[in-house]
Image (tube, rainbow over all chains, first blue to last red; front, top):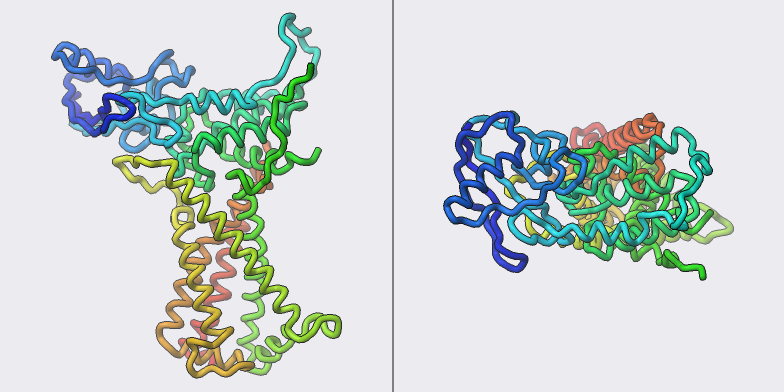
Length: 245
Length: 233
């Protein structure tokens, strides 16, 4: 199939950017969106132009590196990561707009690459459990209820791709932070630092310049891992209960 | 040596989550008042004596412990505080939210519900309406044919001007939308609906939000519509 792409090109963080139109031809339906961009980049390189910069790594939907806003939707029309989005979801002759994640906390580095280190700083502020290192703990030393294990695992699925921030009209990182808080707070291993964790992570999230939550639900709709909106409810409850035991 | 890995608790108002909680609580206070206000309004359908008597009684609540209109002024103080907290938090959070998305997308899709998308402007409309409503039926400043102490006659006089009825109806529709998203949103903000493994609770809260919005809007609208159609004279 033949497509018209309008891609956000920006040569550097402080440079002005804009959408540039490209024609790509001979795209197969089995290609992923990133493979389609690879095809374009090969042509650009042969022409002596700068290839389109975009983040990618595992290309199997589990690392969270890739992500772009395709026709106004984070990761495009399917509920998956951009690398797992296939070209069969588009039709011959389509015009596709491709933009980077837009958030004050995710500055554009180049083209479709944004700096998501704000997420790392949120994790660094409390998205861990404090454990002595050096020797592995005995297996099953801490019994974990099945429900807690399932709930923690569902929320540990978050790959930190940032689609929630990109989709949120307020550029809010609440779903990301909530997924991490639920993941760690429901586990007995995370319980001792439960209160402080929420406080620190919310403070770090606010300090990065993310917006607040207006319960719009766009984040949960865009999340390729299906993290639900009620994670945010749990984050709120954990935060408000922060002062009490 | 033990390390302190987490900072002490910061004031709630300083964080986005805390501000939202303040908004949720003040919103619920206002909502509780609106339910009482709407039920009181329905007295108009029982005649001038009933409504005027009810209005006079409101001024005597708590007597002899409280003086004349003391309860009313206490309620007004609480309501004013709730409106100020609600509005200030909304303003500050909105500024922050808009700043968090400095560059927009080419496609503006509307996937969230109409009620969700109109919370900010709906809130502004409601704020302006509250000012108009007080000037119209409390201080009677803009209600030229009104007389202090005769609320029934004042309501009829107000809704006999074409604009007053329409302002009122428009504001009540905005109110319904605001409550539809606001009530459920408050529950989510206070973490009341997040019983994992219990999706029923969330559904019940959404249903309650819709029911509250519908009942309040219908109840409030019944008064201007009754006056405008001549059912209440």
